[in-house]
Image (tube, rainbow, N blue to C red; front, side):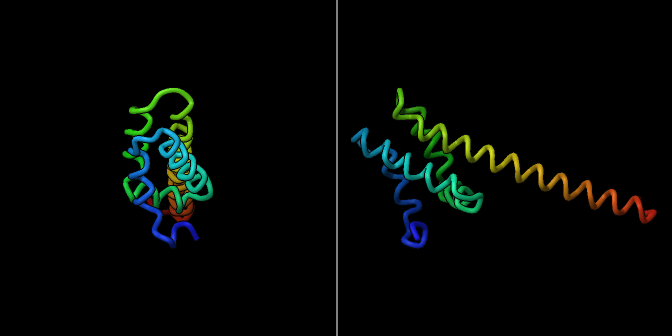
Length: 103
């Protein structure tokens, strides 16, 4: 529902707001959305979220930056699992090809 209302990339601009509470709440919202699924994390990244969060983390200090750091961690975790799944699928195809006498 949140995504269908066009929250991205609009909320990313809130990461640059002068008000620290607005920035932290925006980062928290992005974190909560990104942790729901790979597809939502991908949408956030495609909307410029990864770069915006790196800028947010770089520009803030203390606990305010925590939601941004956690979100970047979710992105990395999803990317790792996606890469692992792709490699597993390739290995399975290669093994199936070898068992059929293909090289």
